[in-house]
Image (cartoon, rainbow, N blue to C red; front, side, top):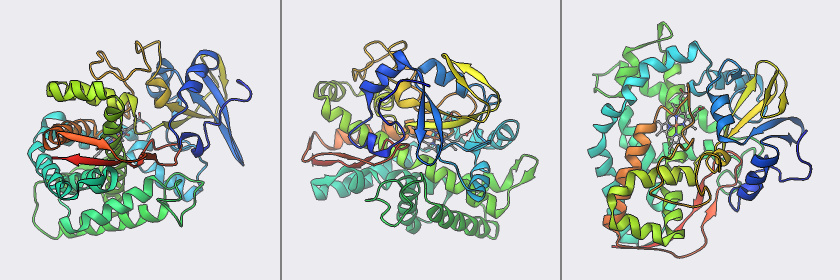
Length: 406
Ligand code: HEM
């Protein structure tokens, strides 16, 4: 069962100083579907090659989301039931009937209409940053942005955005004692913060039903059938949790991780400053290099052999985007950060049925963010040591101390 004595891919500590890329490279070569133990519960197969991650993603009947959820830990029946009701963890055909009514709202053309609002939010944030000069880029600058955008998409009152942002952060950074001092550090995600967001979403849906439509996503959700029925307020609460959670830390990582990568590669930053038309391709390279999520999990529904590994029915299978994005079989000079890379089939948004619903929104936020950042601040420099979130799932940035010079 795999190579003995290699790094522990499960331990959140493994990722604190950056993903173990040397080990991933060796494993892709020697043991590309690698068995990893988990203390006190069944371990899992870590799928490390790009082609194998694509294969698992594209075969939802063989590799189920619903059977055991999408995180590595065994969940108690109540949490598993809640997770199964999330789009991210549904299997076909239910998944398709839930996703179908939402997809048009997240289409590129529709999302492009949010560009001006996103630019305004970004500019407001940078106006505040200009007063500070020395900032923690994660908390003082990018942190609140994605929740504000989702808040706007759903038509939620502005006064609630900051509170929602804090809940979202707790929900996805539960393994880091700094970010979740009272939480259960063994599990990815906090039930408590999810519950508070869900209750808030329920109340918001009820309020909207009782008032006039505003032409936003909330109205669309209230007026559409999902899987042959209209959603209840509780369903909408759950959907809001999913949107806020899915689009919060991931987007923050794209922005903060992106700036960190550019500061670490000054030649690439200069290239980008000299040619802002490269921003869309730089975003793709940032996502490849600093993918916001390390993995998502599936459960095998049959015995299957994958790159020589004998996976048994019921085994956990984790698709490691972090490794797939550096696969030398797909990316030339894969350990080089190159903002002109083309083609760039990075897997940070997944692929197949569950391909990120918010992909156009995330790319638009990223593009506008870097356009505004580079024009607002001709000088940006690190002023201390950046720190990562302690997590085996979120490849997040916890602190990025920088000086922003307007
Ligand atoms: C850089 C930012 C983002 C990254 C890296 C990211 C990444 C991902 C990944 C890896 C998946 C799962 C793919 C799979 O299982 O095959 C996913 C699904 C999803 N994402 Fe994102 N995401 C980002 C931003 C967003 C935003 C802004 C939103 C919404 C506002 C969003 C909403 C969703 C939803 C609803 C799903 C579930 C789709 C489904 O299961 O059909 N994401 N995302």
